[in-house]
Image (cartoon, rainbow, N blue to C red):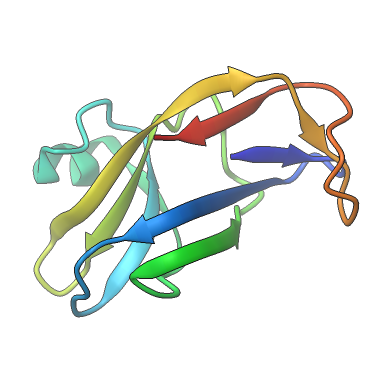
Length: 114
């Protein structure tokens, strides 16, 4: 997760390798335990779009209502069956704000998924 120079955020999924499935979306989740499907629905989430593919690197622009302190995990969510396909916590990694279009870190923080 990167905060960009215009105060927006983007999410980068790297080396993704999960099973393909129907109606897969990427959610940014408020729940701490994203392995519990009910917690994802009860604690709240932001749907940031269709999963672009089940393998490789992907970048998603997060909506303006994303709150870095409120959302604690990522879920690849199967909408059709209301279950997690994959999950990962957001963790503070190192300071960085990425200046849009340059890829250069200038100041701030970065969260990564592992």
